[in-house]
Image 1 (cartoon, rainbow, N blue to C red):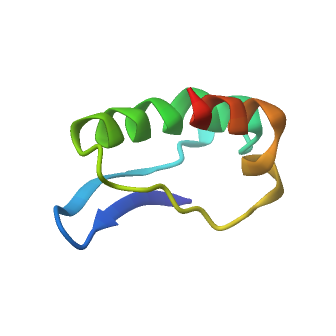
Image 2 (cartoon, one colour):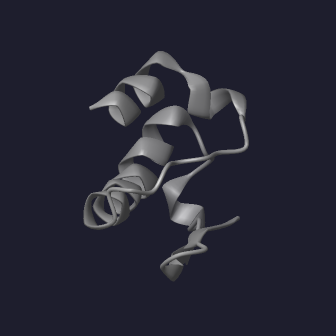
Image 3 (spheres, rainbow, N blue to C red):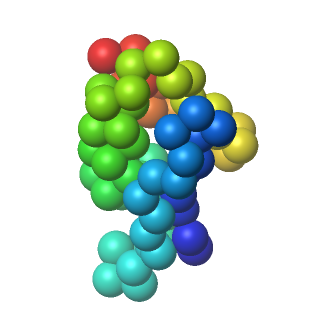
Length: 69
């Protein structure tokens, strides 16, 4: 799976492929590999908002708590 982000104001951000050795995409692994990159980007561009596709794993208690912090 390819994951990346783009902003109309700031352009293309970092993209990455989900590596096979990371296993299947679950909430814990998604938070471990993706959220740290996302937080860094949002920290550097604080006026941006985060939008996701609504997959069940992204809407868990852990994920929502990370996004609120």
